[in-house]
Length: 416
Image (cartoon, rainbow, N blue to C red; front, side, top):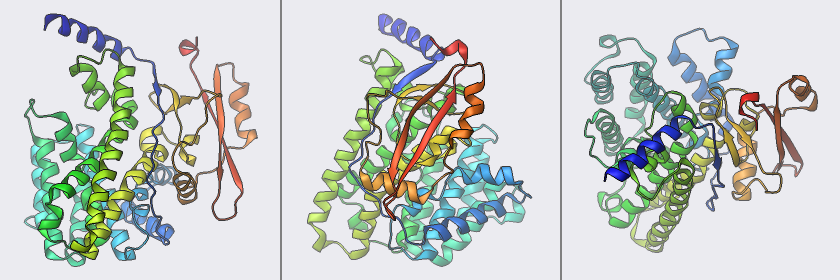
């Protein structure tokens, strides 16, 4: 035991001095379905989010929020839900971001904050009775919409999920399993309940096969989040992510790189586990209602949709990062407090997800392409730079290729 503790102390010291790590490929064999009205859904949800801030946002502030691409997971999870449900689900995604950030940034006292959130969800508190902050305004306005939109049983299930998230956040049980903790606080199921808008039989969603499929989906989602949010948490000196937890607790993991590799293997294992149980449920389709099977399809789409979002959101990679233009990336992730910097191996190919993943994610949330003249000022500076190979994507609508060259400055102290 003493030897293990000494090993881990050394690992922690190296972790705090970390400058870079290798991001492996994260394959995904599942496909998502883009909603045909994704543009108007995204626009309406974003405008609602702006109004929730109750501020006269500057163009730069709006741009910053837009580059989060919050409605993306909703818009890629089904092509068939009514637009009203889609907009409500996209609003829910914004509400989750607004609710999470005060906790992540230690801006609120967790217990009283979460009690207030639950009171707003249950309708036992009015907006006039609580502090005037964006998270409470978004929660109150969203719940008002959901009460009129969802069937009573589904609304009850949605609120129950919010309660589970609140319990996991406020828990001070240091002995609880980290993986179970993250599964409970990922807080994404309400998005999918809202999309379908129909309730299911308890025996359907409580069957062992469905619970296993749902848990595998949730695990995949939070594990992807733990990889892509590491940079943000590293500079906040937080260790509440799976690679750090593995490094600190798993005797077989001796370096941070081993922890990252193990996490990426677990992500792929969770995809395979989900597919296994989804196929069992699909084989018994005649026993399940149509709404239940639609919900199962949404969960299947959620895995690649969430992965696409994490590759393309400025929440994880910094504002105006060329990586936000779409597609996948892997290679040396050089840690920087403001943005994600990836140096890729020119001898390896990029774009290791399904073709539908790449083309759809590109067309859905396309960012401005960086032109050659935009690169010249950076190249002219007397600092080390790294250009990694451009991503070529074929647009599904006209078959043309779009190229996104990516360039990042690397501080001279970090070059070798």
